[in-house]
Length: 74
Image (cartoon, rainbow, N blue to C red):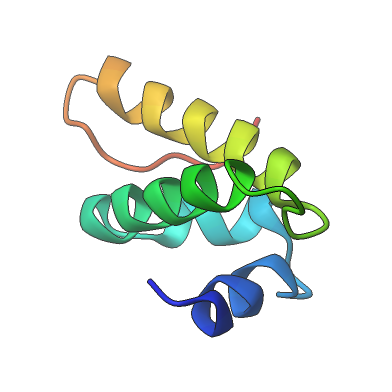
């Protein structure tokens, strides 16, 4: 994922609470990878850490769900 696409996620007005549950498993994995790589730079994008933490939580929710489906934030 290039930095332009990553910035579209980070600047999405809906925020990670709405965006992350709507992603497919592949999209979530790609976003997690892009966020991780971005955080490993000298100057990560603003908001990347919060998005990464919430994406990890979404991934864990899916992994613990019996059907592996996305679920909204309670």
